[in-house]
Length: 435
Ligand code: ARG
Image 1 (cartoon, rainbow, N blue to C red):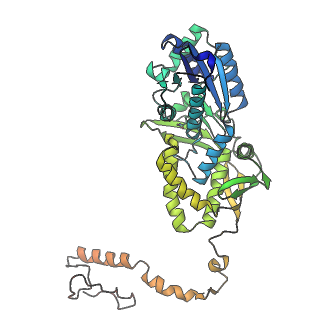
Image 2 (image 1 turned 90 degrees about the vertical axis):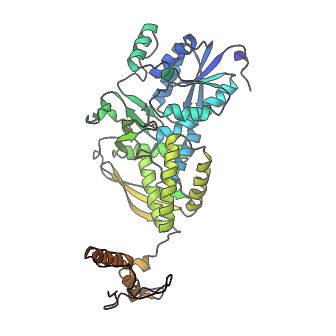
Image 3 (image 1 turned 45 degrees about the vertical axis):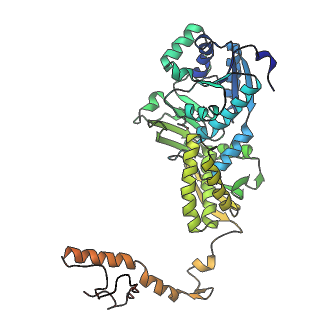
C-alpha cells in the first residue's frame, strides 16, 4: 500500500527518537539533501514511556509527520532467542544490537508503505548502529542517508545548530550522556564516562538500585524448551516477563556492566549497561542447560552460542549462517524444560536450585553414599585411573631424556617394523619404558 499524499513529493523516512542527532537531521534532510518531506518513524522496542512521549512531542514541535510502530512483542521474541543462545558480547547482553535490525525492518516497511524514496538515520560514523541499520536497508532499492556521518557533525556543532534554528532539544536526550534503552538493556556512554578512570556517578543508573540495598530474595523461572514462560509460577508473555524481571532484579542492583567494548570498526569504547532481566534469564537458562545437556553438547553449544552472539552484535542475525546456528541451538533446547530458582542479592544472581524431568544426571551415580551404580563398582575406575595422563607421562619422560642428551625416539626402544602398532605397556610398576 502506498500512502497517496507523498507520491509527488520527495519523501524520506527518518529513524526518529527525538534525541539531538535525529532532531537536527530533520532540517538538514530538507536543506542539505533537498527532501520535501521528512517522516519520523519511531519504533517501540520497550524503551521507557517518557522517551516515546518525548519523541512524539519533538516530532510535533518540528512539525513533521510521525509514524509510531509497536514492535515490542517481536523484539521480546528476539530477546528470548538470545536467552536460548546464552548470548552476550564481551559480557554485554546485546540490547541495542538486538533491537537495531528490528527497528530497521520496521522503518523500511513504513517507508515503502508511505512511498518514501530514501531512508535516513542519525548515527555517527564511529559506532555500530550505522552498520546495523544499513545492513538491513541496503538490501532495498531506497537511498540510504546518514547526515551526521556524511556531514561530519559533532555534538557541539549540533547543539549550536539546534540553538540557532530554535529546534526543540530542551526536554530531549540532550543531557551529558548518550543513552539507548529498550526492553533488554539500557546503555549509557559519552561525556565524563569516556574516561575509563572515571567512576560512574550513581545517577548513571536508572534501572538498578545500589547493590545491597534490598534484602535477599529468590525468584523461580520456568523454562519450556529453553523459553522462559513463567516467573514464580505465574505465566507471562515474553515482554511482560522481561519487564517484570527488570523490576524485581533491578531492586537488587543485578545486571550492571561497566566495560571496555570493542566496536565493529575497531574503536574501543567505555560502556555502562543495565540489564537486570537479561542477567537473571541468562543465568537461569545456563544453569538448566548445565543439568540437562551432556558435556559434549555444552562444549559444542558454547562455540555456537559465541558465534550467535557475535552475529547479533554485528546486527547480522538475518545472515544464512545464523539459520544453521539456530538449527543447532533449537535441537539442544528440546530438553531445556524445568525450573531454576535464583537468589538475588548485592548485585548478583546465583542459581540455588534446579528441577527438571530431563536431567542428564544421576544422583545415585554421583553420590558419595552409594557403593555401586548400575553394577559399576568404585573399583572399576582403577583401570581408567591407570591410563589417565598416560600420554603426558610418556611425553614428560621423553622430554627429560632429551635434556639429558639421550637419543629418545619415543618408542619402546625395541627394534620394531615401521608402522607397527604396539599396545602401550600398562603403567604398573616396572611396566614403563626402559632405555
Ligand atoms: N555499544 C552498544 C552497542 O553497540 C550500545 C550503544 C548504545 N548507544 C548509545 N547511544 N548509548 O550495541
